[in-house]
Length: 547
Image 1 (cartoon, rainbow, N blue to C red):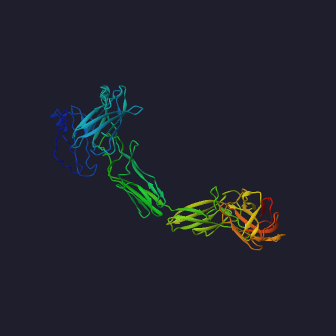
Image 2: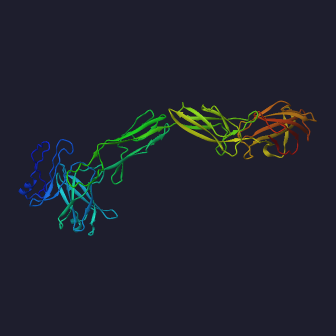
Image 3: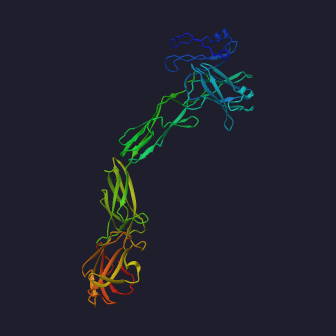
């Protein structure tokens, strides 16, 4: 450079044979043109890095060697850091920044210092092939303000430097050469600063793995991590793909949700992602006392993948009415004739899979390898929900499981009481076959746990009656010996209507007795299996049949 003017001088091409070394007469050139204040020498060749090695050094006016000047590559980077500068104890630090390109560059010089991480920022515009020198000590002494009007403290002794793009972003790479030296003019000592090529330190795809059901979705993100810890999300500008679209589909760049995967069918598939834009790679600290510094690395693209698994889903449906208020399934313990069984169904998505059932204590399962199974009890539960049934559903080698807690109820008592809870056991009746009395009874079962009604619908009770006393010659419905069957309703209770009538009616105070035998789904109740009811126009206490 001649003052502020940038001039270029093209040297003739040079042919170097194997092992040959040749000197460039830069010193003579500068002596003939004393107006030159600084000079930058650039050369290029076709070959691998390190095929040509350049050695350079600084000399004083007498031609004496002072210190080495290592050659540096002119390559793209996300910024260059100098990790240490010193301005104390008679030392100072100077930097040279050179723009090797044929067009101007807008750069930003940032000085970092202090325990609190203070910064001093100076825009730096370099014309094509121009260079600039920065003297840290002079910036401090002259109290030069930065772009925000801040000055460096007068007692400042050390810090670090960052050269980056004007916007200080990862997408704006720079091509600039930074060279620095720490020197002590009183002691005539000089040393180089250590530089660092700034860039990406890693990449991240989240989540690490995908687990979805058919029709389920998972949104992935992709980012790279800058040297200062900042994450840059590149999800929407990356290309996404699936190794098995029939199992898992993935939206890619240009679609509404890049990285969004949707489960199609059970199985496994990998989701791949590629970002095809150049990214500087963080090179770490470079402190080379002599020789050539390597170029700052840049990767043309980055990629990653995440394993995906599409698993089926399964739910267990319990027969209607056989669920408690607490959410437990119910099984009624069978006796000699067997009270009941509870149906369960495994509903899998997608369909077409296989089912394996497992039953817990006090339960026995039928149809253990089909979607529909039945549960019977082997012993009553000690507490509500103390057993279970589970279903394992498998499709294309992928499985899912579901489980429902169950209670095995052991009916201990069959109780009968006046319907509606009234005081009269019988009421007057006037029907097509005559006049008489109607006895209304409600039956319900008590379990071994709570002593309250087992509210299970669909239990069948059968009664057979025989007359033991009928002084007025009344007729009865149901007749003697004819079984009458009823099914419990939604509340688990069964209403029973018993009639006594005569063609001309029955007198007030009419009394008759009938013996009643009851069975529940084939199981007889009460030790004697019988209960005698007296039909009279009077108050009757609640009747209890013990199992």
